[in-house]
Image (cartoon, rainbow, N blue to C red):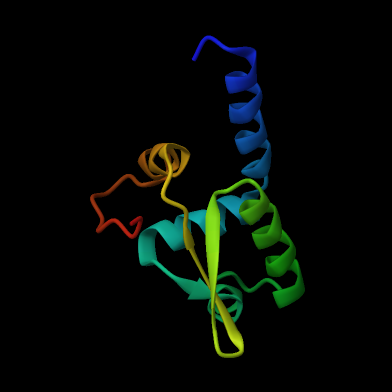
Length: 100
C-alpha cells in the first residue's frame, strides 16, 4: 500500500466506520449475518430512519450489500478485505463467518 490513493481509500472506509452506531451495526451483521432494518432496530433500540441513514453510509463505502426480498431489504457484510479486517478488530471470540 504505497500509493496515496490506497491511503485515501482506507481513510474513506475508516470515516464510514467513525460512528458508534455504524460500528454496532457492522458488529451485529458480522456476528449474526443478514438483517433487515426492523431487526437492527430491535437490537439497537435506534429508530428505523436513523438506522437507514447509517446503512446508506455503510453501503456507499462498500462495507455492506443489500438484497430486496418482497417489501423487505436485507443487509449483510460485503465480501472484501476491509470487512475481514473489521471482523478481526471487532470480534474477540471465534464466531461463524457470515461473509461470503
